[in-house]
Image (cartoon, rainbow, N blue to C red; front, top):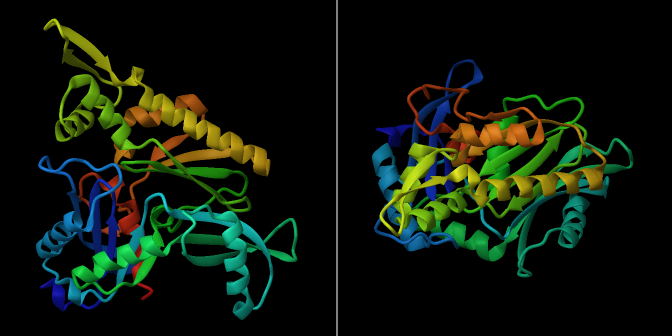
Length: 357
């Protein structure tokens, strides 16, 4: 039974559309060995999709089923990484004077409140010093992450409801990015654009070896494409999801018109793809204006939509930058049979981080 193995690392990503869990243990040659990767859609046809996110009463039974399938009681998990997503999270790089550790925390907390837009309620803040600022050696680059106490407490409530002991808790965009940075070299010059394509929104992160970290939520995700299919074809959410997965984003689909005749619906002509492209373009233009850095060396895609060849081709053509889908399980032993691998980015990053507990 898995429950007897105390060395298991569990990464848990509770998303707005699906829950992803990666269970791993230490393998050979410093690698992680995948024990189990499980994904469960939150909405299976009986429930109405909630764009504001699923409630605890919906999430808890699914989590219990996933742990039962894994053969592991939540109480036996000693190395857990989980993440918080949604609107009330923020991550930003700021500059700070170099201070002793005991003074840095209070200084960063005060500075962070000026830069991190949340909902105005009490916040939970953490930080990581990235290194010296190459322009001003008297200052250090600091990555600050924050969420509201309400969101943080709600997340803990879900974990404790199923007897999971909280461990590493990260922001979902940073957890997904960590799955890539652990195995990839950043360019010496220029930056990469990391796109975490979720159901409700897309997290855009710009990362470079010497350049300013940038993070922005784009209000276009997989649900925007699904919603268009629902509206145009007059189908329910689950059927629209299946059409999106089977037909692709650039495939003409035959819909029945009001007169009973066939109408061609080409998703490439619809606004969701163009809106996503426009949001990315707007964000990158802002980054160039604020930082002066305009060398984008690569687009890296994770998340459900990252499997779409049409999306990769669209972005590569629009921006003239190499665009690749990233497999976050490629560096795990025993992950060969897992399907839809790009959606496990955050869970994989969290499982690796959990080994430090």
